[in-house]
Amino acid sequence: MKKLLFFAISLILYSNSAFRQSAKLDAQEVKALKEIWGKLKLTRKKEWNFEKDPCSGEGNWRLSVGCNCSFETNTTCHVTHISITSQYVAAILPWEFAKLQFLQSLDLDYNYLRGTIPSNWATMRLTTLSLMGNRLSGLFPTALARMTTLQDLNIEGNQFKGSIPEEIAKMKNLERLVLSSNDFSGQLPDALSKLTNLTDLRISDNNFTGKIPRFISKWTQIRKLHIQGCSFEGAIPSSISVLTQLNDLRISDLKGGASTFPPLQKMTHLKILVLRNCLIYGPIPYYVGYLRSLQTLDLSFNNLTGDIPYSFSMLKKVEYIYLTENNLTGLMPEWFLSSTKVIDVSYNHFTWDAYGPKRCEEGAINVVESYSSSTKKQNDIHPCLRKDFPCTKLDSQKIRSLHINCGGEEVNINNFIKYDADTERRGASTYYNDGNWAFSSTGNFLDDDHDSYILFNTSNLHSIPTLDTDLYTTARTSAISLTYYGLCLANGDYTVRLHFAEIVFTQDNPSGKLGKRVFDVYVQGELKLKDFDIVEAAGGIGKAIIKSYIVNVKNNTLKIRLYWAGKGTTGIPYRGCYGPIISAISVNQSK
Ligand SMILES: *[C@@H]1O[C@H](CO)[C@@H](O)[C@H](O)[C@H]1NC(C)=O
Ligand SMILES: *[C@@H]1O[C@H](CO)[C@@H](O)[C@H](O)[C@H]1NC(C)=O
Ligand SMILES: *[C@@H]1O[C@H](CO)[C@@H](O)[C@H](O)[C@H]1NC(C)=O
Ligand SMILES: *[C@@H]1O[C@H](CO)[C@@H](O)[C@H](O)[C@H]1NC(C)=O
Ligand SMILES: *[C@@H]1O[C@H](CO)[C@@H](O)[C@H](O)[C@H]1NC(C)=O
Ligand SMILES: *[C@@H]1O[C@H](CO)[C@@H](O)[C@H](O)[C@H]1NC(C)=O
Ligand SMILES: *[C@@H]1O[C@H](CO)[C@@H](O)[C@H](O)[C@H]1NC(C)=O
Ligand SMILES: *[C@@H]1O[C@H](CO)[C@@H](O)[C@H](O)[C@H]1NC(C)=O
Image 1 (cartoon, rainbow, N blue to C red):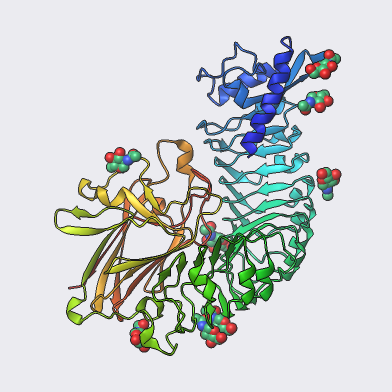
Image 2 (cartoon, rainbow, N blue to C red; image 1 turned 30 degrees about the vertical axis):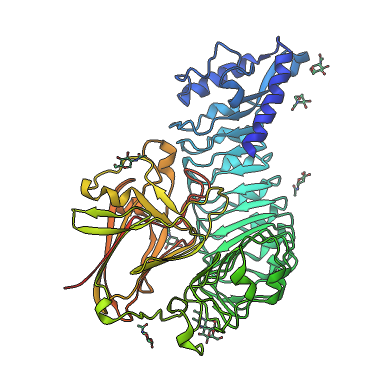
């Protein structure tokens, strides 16, 4: 969208300047551009030819430089827009950008820029600055706080650290502020409450402390608010109720301090509502069904009790409903079972009646383990619907080992261990049973058009024994939670081996290295890996790491859950790239 807009602007400016053949870029600015292009090592590329006037709109100039040529009776141009994205520029940020005093918009997304923001940038009068997906570091740059003209600032996916400074209060014109996926810490300063023009604030995937502040109520214009995986403690403040313009609210993975459902009844514009793992208990308010614009509703991993409100039938626009892992009871709405919408109600305590589901996946609804074990008529209920997931096979049919090539075809490793194929393509709300094993997958990738739950290696694998490479060329992924089940295992001790390799980020393209994938792993309900980062554990991209656990299987069932706790980057190398991945699973009974 932004790119398109910029493209349109540059076209307009280009046609203006084309009209006036005589208009030329100001000589001082030509010099400054040469210095900048030199420092960014772009002069080596023939696309930017300084023989042509940078405002001429020829070659790559048209896409990367926008000018206003109406100066000195249409004879002089000044650079107003610069966009150099995905050029894999490995350099420090040139201070010479500050020489372009007419520059309004600077977009350097997806490069490999390092260092910090030069202090002389404080003299610039930018309205838009986007530095997403680089490796800029240091404290929040004070030069930015002094650039009070900024309306749109995006520094997502860098390595800035420390607390958000009080000076940020000076950036009164900010409408969009994206700080996600940095190493910011500390409490959010009161100064942020001064930014009353904010319409879009994203601070996910930082390491803040304290609570989500009550002053969020000051952001009365806000439409998009993302606070995922931030380590905030305690409840969502009730002052949030006044933010009636919100259409995209995402809060996840709060810790310490349970609360009831926050007051959202006035947020009738909400399209996306994510309140995942926020320690919310008590009933789902009836009014949620009246939030008629809702398209995605994610209330998973809370402690919600009571019935699903009847009002949910009014959610005509909804496409995705996630109520996974709560404590919901009563009868499941009958229309859920025939719905074409993606609905996941797995891991709850519904009461089964004769109209209840017969299997764990009915249409697009995942109902695995959604019925209370105390439900009457236990024997009528399909085992996969029940909490204890009982095995109905004879002892002689129980298995003692299990091998799955997650996301891939059947392979024989060393010619004698057969890894089962696992190629089911669905995953937003899916239960898939292969006989000896099954998986339950929850979540679609937000902000991403191509939902893909099977991933393929995008570059070469390294230091993986050739015999094993087939296990790592594919992986299964999930946007919220992925649980593999070993079914009908003979009881006893097992060695569970989880095979991981990062196959999506790539070494070949510098900005592809900047992605960070972080998730949690539970085996038999026990947290085994917190904030697991495959690249860190394996020592690089495309390298394998095997995590091995000895576990006891009591009720013939083994459960391995991978959960995305809102951490890690979500936009590198492409928007919507996040969540757990796993390459293979092997399970063997201990001798
Ligand atoms: C170009 O600059 C002139 C003079 O500052 C200004 O009046 C005009 O609005 C600008 N044009 C555009 C398209 O920004
Ligand atoms: C400059 O160009 C614009 C658009 O082409 C035109 O409307 C305007 O009259 C010109 N100004 C002068 C001083 O020539
Ligand atoms: C909000 O933006 C408007 C222009 O859109 C500006 O006039 C106003 O000063 C800004 N608000 C604050 C608190 O600065
Ligand atoms: C987050 O901050 C806390 C202390 O405030 C610290 O103990 C923890 O290690 C930090 N986590 C990360 C991932 O940096
Ligand atoms: C869920 O909430 C109930 C009270 O409604 C409480 O008794 C129970 O301990 C909570 N469970 C969890 C896992 O927080
Ligand atoms: C479910 O809710 C009941 C009270 O309604 C509570 O006793 C029980 O502990 C809850 N279960 C879980 C798993 O939170
Ligand atoms: C995936 O990895 C294999 C093994 O290293 C390699 O042969 C193949 O070319 C890789 N695929 C891509 C698309 O790079
Ligand atoms: C095994 O299942 C029985 C009922 O079938 C249940 O009482 C028991 O708690 C289960 N054990 C485990 C470890 O889940």
